[in-house]
Image (cartoon, rainbow over all chains, first blue to last red; front, side, top):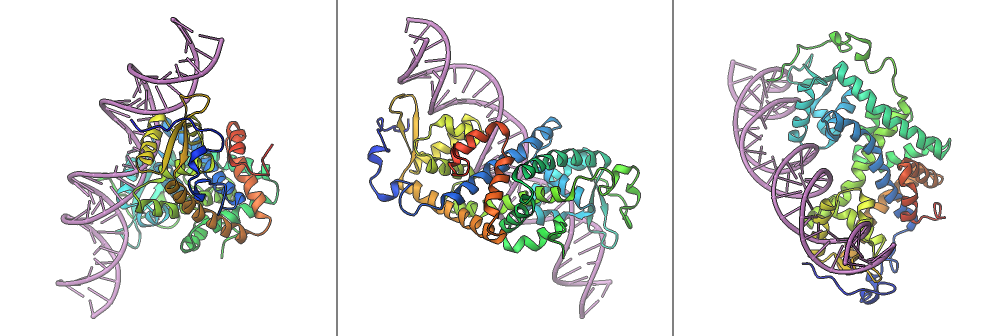
Length: 183
Length: 183
DNA sequence: CAAATAAGTCAACATGACTGACATAACCGC
DNA sequence: GCGGTTATGTCAGTCATGTTGACTTATTTG
């Protein structure tokens, strides 16, 4: 099939035709920073894993979780708001939202002033699920924060917030409604 | 289609049939912790977004990025190692790995001692791409860390590391080869 | 030599994302 | 009140990435 080269010896033998062939030479990115990049990957992988397992049991996926979560936290959210938060297309949202409504997790009601709007809220069933998932995730965060020490919470939040794209920070700050970022 | 209830007034009007209907009452999860959960979502969303855009131009996806990254950082990695790191199935990996090999980003060579193994390394082309992507991500991390202040780096790393599942921490620590976590 | 291991492969499928076009309904300004 | 804009929903098709389970091949190891 694909051609496999002969066994190599030592420091990747014949492969060092050019300087760039050795990733540990030349313009190596700062090792500390790279490790943070990798930790972010592993942390997020395991952060979502726990909730995914619960969701799988009831036939929902991560996409449903995100909708559920933000509607839980922002009752009366409009579809357009959700599109802006999740940064996905109308189609992608429509599919999962329909399933959540059909399965009795989310209810839609017309906007009071603007009747074109569909204000989204959770049913009791939806609220219970959202709580269950958020409990899993906050427990993991709490454990990690206490592991990292008392000062970690503020700095971690600052770091994560600064990782958000500049254009979205205002929106995120409003959404998370955290004392530290409130106006 | 789906039934839409009539407009609601005030604090989600008739919806408060039970105590659980109001997510801001009762056993509300700690607001600080929830905000960290949400920040993690937004931070990761934007963390991956930049690299995704570059990858899209050349017809690759996030899955390719992950393979590229870990082979870049761990030249000579075996397929089995990669499966353990990424926690995906052999099939999923096979597809993206084949594309990376076919497109000249990755080379495979037989293991020196065990010739069943395929040691993975990057070509110059692969190394260049990996560097370009890692530069984007470390730049974002560096900006966020400086934003969060001098003490943020250590604590952020501690936090992220503690977010990793207990069973994987040893493996992750070995992989990231960070002074702080080295044996 | 037999069993275990590393890798590759086939076939089928689920999820969640995308695009682009089009259909309603409702609001708002003129 | 008409026309443009907005909020939402929908149709139809595609793509990327993940899954399962079974099977093959080459190789190492007991």
